[in-house]
Amino acid sequence: MAIIPRQQDPQLQSQPSLLPFKYSHRVLLKTLLDRQDGGRGFAGQRVLVGGWVKTSKEVKKPLPPPAPAASVPHEERFIDREKKGDKDISCVEMLQSRIPLIRSIWEVFGGGGYGRSHAPSRKRIESAPPKPATPPSPPQLSTAYLLITDGSCVASLQVVVESSVAQPSNLLPTGTCILVEGQIERPATEGKHVIELKADKVLHIGTVDVDKYPLSKKRVPLEMLRDFPQFRPRTTTVATVMRIRNALSFATHSFFNGQGFLDVHLPIITTTDCEGFGKLFQVAGLEQKADKQKLSTIHETDGVSLDIVKAAAKEKSNIVETLKRTESNREALAAAVQDLRKTNELVSQLEAIEKKNLKSLSSKDEVVDASRDLFLTVSGRLHLESYACALGNVYSFGPRFQADKTDSAKHASEMWMVEVEMAFSQLRDAMNCASDYFNHLIMYVLETCHEDMKFIAKRIDNACFTRLQQTASGFPEMLSYNEVIDILRKVEDKKFETNFKSGVALTAEHLSYLVDTIYKKPVMIYDYPKEAKPFYCRLNDNGRTVAAFDLVVPKVGTIISGSQNEERINIINSRINELALPREKYEWYLDLHRNGTAKNAGFTLRFDLMVLFITGLTNVRDVIPFPRSYGKANN
Image (cartoon, rainbow, N blue to C red):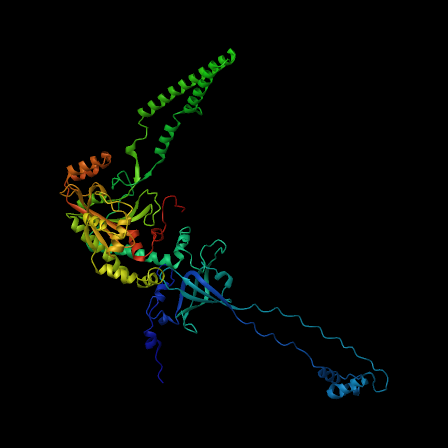
């Protein structure tokens, strides 16, 4: 029979190659497990893998049966003595040793005490040989079965480690980090796992403090995981959400790059409130804090507070008046008057010092100036518009901040936004771009995150595939703001807390009923009242509404907001005056529209809410890596 050379063996040639990660030489579990055959094709190959233990068990091996104790039969002892020439052996002893039956009869009739001369025989008391030392029992062998994950995919790999390779007690706790090397094999009984790693080298063990580690084999509620943001990505649910978030981030850049947009990085610290009525986080530098501290200490001199001295003077004045009305002795009244005079003199001295300090601060321009206030930006669309007026089509992707103290499941203090601006575009262009981008995100996740979405369907939202496919293949319902008001006014089976009147912003309750109950799909609302939108939205010809829109989706609410921006300088001026905005902070924006302005349109996608919509989760804090909300930023 011809021997096929190894390099020509068809079975070996068809075996897939297993490439390690370039920068750590380990094989990612995704490479092993995210295949149609579940990794069977890699059986027989040696790999180096690393990960964290999710679950584990130890199986003890049975101890070997104890070796029988070495004993010398009674007959053999006499035979041995006979061979050695022991002359004291009697015929009776020989018969007893050689014929057990005769020995037994002899003992019954009491014949064991006489020898050959009918004299009492010397009864030999043979000392028992010393018992051999009991050898130490061998340690019981066991096998550790570890289910590990490295975060690259939903699936986990079973790693089998014998106790002769590593101490099982160091490997078993949930959360233990291991780096092992071994051979991929098929389990003896194929069940849940189609392959396993038979480890023969353990290169690293990151132990766990079991008493303090918050994760366990049991599922931990998402609400509890928020208290441990450093550990929660080790859970399958949060890791899956983060992979989907990463896919949405990549799809964002690929979409806009494919459409010819340029990515512009916008400032986080700004002096401009882009929304005009947002709640801002103020950034106070050390110098500003020092100025405020100076103002607070102006009323104090040598540790004496002017306000306290004034209060003391008032109290002593009341004492003097009381003494005058009563029949007190003149000495007590004179002492009180003298004390009041000294206190009033101290008040005069402190007031003079205060005036001097204020004058000094004013001359040195050290009084806190409101124009120096810095804020964390709520929106970057105004800044982005300046680049659209030079580069054409631009977008930005980054964090935005709003100092809202409400504890809402759809809001966090720091949320990531995708902001878009297009030169020479109008409202309808922005609406079309927003719709295309929204659908692109959905389709990209469905195409590239199939295993992650299968887990979402199993664990969180069993209708996620149908819901997302129907959303991406259809078109949102297009309604004007006035049409929405008319529809909601006709609702009879629902009583809303907020009455409808012209100019009011639609509440989350209104929007939820519109998309969840009436249409059961996304709705795009446009032409809002000017009171409900920022000052820079373009005023429509009726003078009451602006060219702005919102894309509202089921279960989440408003996910995209956009507008055509006002290009007419006179109307921008009037809107700033109408809303009583600090004009000096928007002077740079006005200057932009005095010099070569163009019609612009754009929108903002709330990225975190998009992740919420895709995954079917209900609280935005569960899709943000390190959520920041009011009073909660502990790391």
